[in-house]
Image: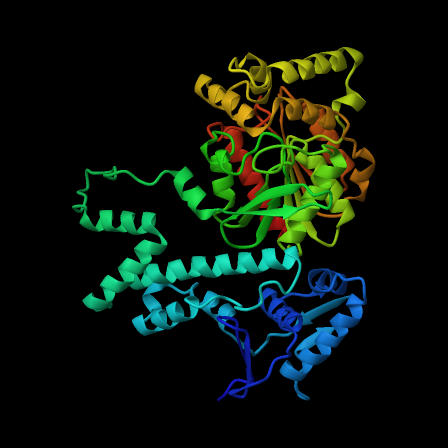
Length: 503
């Protein structure tokens, strides 16, 4: 029985009804709109679609209505409406339709043994085409970021199909040589490791350690993560990166991060890798640090929130949980209040609602200002003593080796002037009045003996958010180390929270 509707997203967008190809609108934006609705498979706000495709001085809402009217002629029938719209949202009803990209992804979830060589070769042929070819430039930066991400996901699927072809037991020898070459070109590390295992003598029962070097976690992560840039209204360019697959999880930026150097870190590398096993993990460098612009006029809390907004918009994220660490917690809270329809939950670690300018005693403020001055004059020197002030309070239980690494890492992430500006900006933060407006499931984790942000500040953050779950952890570190039991406890608490709330 022929399918009522078939949509091909590999190569140029194509739509067929009852086996016959239909003509698509001449408007690239209208075709891109259809591709976006079909591929995302969820409702979108009309305002968001207007921003993506028609944010012009004329009438974007009228342009959206016109495009939807043209698309209905392509996919709707008297018996079945596919383009569904109400006053607020628009979506595509895909039930019963054949969509090649969706069906291919679903097929790849089947066990490898179920695939024939012919099935895998058909998948490889589809994935060799550019996804949604010809739709570049049809929308704004948000659409372009979404399109890039979709193509990167398709590229990851292509690598997986090549791996299955190259290692398929039923593959004829001559064909196997071709697929192994293509797999090696696409993923040299994995192919090399496979070849090494094949050449390795089988282990006896007494052998429990692998032979030969493995690619380092850092190298694998750097190869896998996808770095891009988006521009904030004030002209600042923000660097972001995504890694992994699955539902998105967005981490609000915090100081002392670097999209590339983080993977060497005893405090970030393993944590980020763990998240990316089950999620598309997205993070970005704070303005003034890392790979984002350093020479910035605004280094303020409002600017931090705008940077988060820009990254979420650029990637076309519709609904997602937010991870906030340290001052990133306040940024996450503010974003969740401003955009309740987009945030599904908050994971807040070592955070606070109000900075030291609001809560610290006069003596403590004097100490903070002295440290701020020391930062300006000593941060960029070869002597780590100035930076050591931070590393000792961030991670008092870290090893000497980890502290030395962190001292050097601080210098690489920000200039002396910006390091001082960050401290001042964090002192000015105050979202205490916003906590009661948070309407999403929230978990707050905090070290009992945090040497930088006292436990009381984490407890106050949790108590101000309706229904927030508070988890104290047995640690003195502001940033948890992956070697301490509290790190594992925190991961388990977050995993349970996400499962119970469905975020």
